[in-house]
Image (cartoon, rainbow, N blue to C red; front, side, top):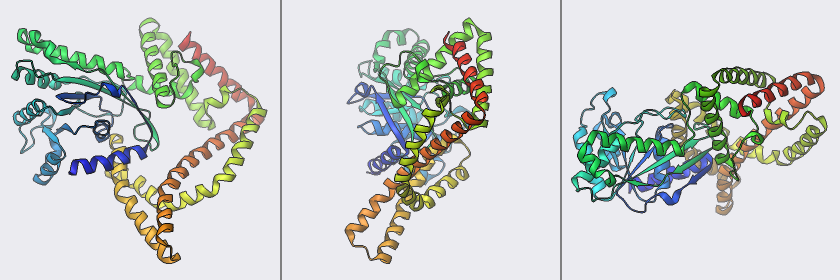
Length: 440
C-alpha cells in the first residue's frame, strides 16, 4: 500500500518538476516478469523513481546497504520493495548480508517480479558510462541455473538522458532497448561461468551505449555541452522530425560522436575546437548574449520587430506573472534554500527538491487558502478555484521569468548591434570557424 501511494505522489512530483518526459521504446517493456531492468545512474534517487513511474508492475530495487543503517529504516525500505546490497568500497552494513540479498533477488525473479539494478554502482552527474559491475549478469545467470535455464529471465536496458538533471522544468528522454534472454547463454555458462558473465555484462553495456548520448570522460562531457550551447540546429545532420528533448539528445550525441572521430583522425583539430569553444563561451557570457541571435543575422530591423511583439506579450501577461510569482515566492525560495543546505552533491538536488516540494507546498497552500478564505469570506467553490490557481500560476510565473530573461538578451543584443557591431561580427566569425572545424 505504501509503495503505491508513494509511487502516485512521486510520479506527480516528477511530471511537475520536469517540463517534458519523452519515452521511446515503451513497447519493449515486458508485461510480465521475470525481468531485470538495468539503467545508467546519473541522478541518484530520481533514476529509480523514473523507472518506477514508467513501469505498470511493482518493481524491486537493489539499493546500497548504507541506507539500511537502522531498524526503522530497514522496515520502511523493505516495505518499499528495496533489497540491500553491501558495496565493496563502503564496507559491510550491520544487519545486511549479501548472501541473503542475492537469494532474495533469485526468489523475486523466480516469482516473476521486476528487479532494478544500476550496474554502474555509483551515481554521478555526467554522460560518461562508467565501468559496469558484473552483479547483474551473475544474478540473471544464477537464477537461470537454479531453474535449468528454463525460467526466461529477460534483461531490459533503459537509457535515462537528462537535458539538465538538477534544473526545474528541464527535460528527460527515456530510451528502452529490446529485451534479451539470458537462457541463450546456457552452453556458454556451463563451459565457463565467468566468461559468460562477462559476455552478458558486455551485452548490457552495448545496449546502454545504443540508448544513451555518452561521452568519453568529464572533459569530453564539458566540451560537448559547450559546443551544444554554441551550435545551431541547422548545422546538425540526421535529426529527422525529432523535437524537444529528443532533438537535444540527438544533437549532443552527434557532437560527441564527431569529437570521438576527430580524436582518432585529427587530434590537433580537437585541441583547436576546445580552445575556440571556450573562447566563444567566455565572450557570450561576458556580453550576456546567446548564439541564436547572432545566427539569425546581424540585422537591427528583425531584432526590433521581435522585441516589439515580445514587449506587447510581456505587458499583457505581466499581471498573471505577478499573481503567480508573489503567491509562490515563499515556498519556491524555501525549497531553493534548503536543497543545498541538505546536500552539496548536485546529483541529489532534483530528488530533494521534489521531496521538499511535496512536503512544503501543500502545507503552504492550505494555510494560504485558509487565511484568504477567512479574510475575504470565500465560499467553498471560490476557495477551490483559488487553490487550483496557485500551482498553475506558479509554474506560469517561472516560465514567464525565463521569457523575461530572453527579452533581456534581445535588448542587450540590440544595444550591441547599435554601439559595438564589430564585437558581434567577430563573434559571428569565430562561430563560423568553429563549425568548419567540426563539420568539414
